[in-house]
Length: 239
Image (tube, rainbow, N blue to C red; front, side, top):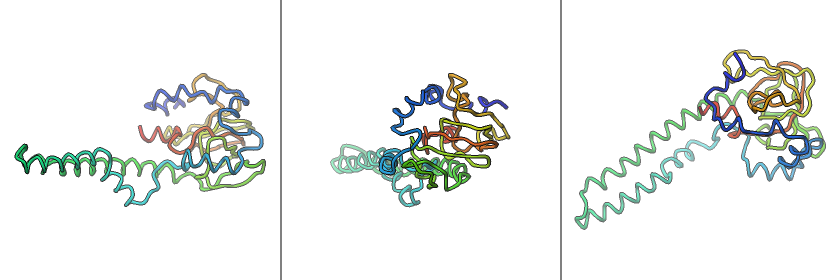
């Protein structure tokens, strides 16, 4: 199975991404990072507030997730419409059926949306839990291990054979590097990877590795270009 087969159905806009074609200087400027020394801790914390956790699914507790759906903008609009319909009924302008049915419609919409989102969340969580909790990065010009939930665009990540890639990365250096993208193809698919741009297509260039893929051989270093819900794996599971 080819690499492209594993990405069938993914938004075509992904193929317009240009991280793989940028020069090191353009990468450094675009991601606001130093490709040798990495991000400062201060800048990383600011980016974490902007991009959120490097996680595929919503980690809010059950009550918060239910609350979001029960009081979504659409259901709030329907509840307000039901209130106005009630007063209109009192004045004899509309039938009682209208203000009685509207809350039921809101509840049905909330329930259907909640069930769909919980199923999607379950699929995303199944993919996410396979990623190790820690990863090796360079920050403040020092090697350190951080929670992979704290990874942000611009972080410099080191990985070696046996490691699971913790984010979408543009490769900066590679040594006999090969990755397995089984999480995309559902069967073992070993592909060579290097720091060279080998295709105009982001999905096919050898200098990109994806969140969830396995480093099958060698070692490498890359800069984070996508985390959490901005990764290729998230888009694929959503499809």
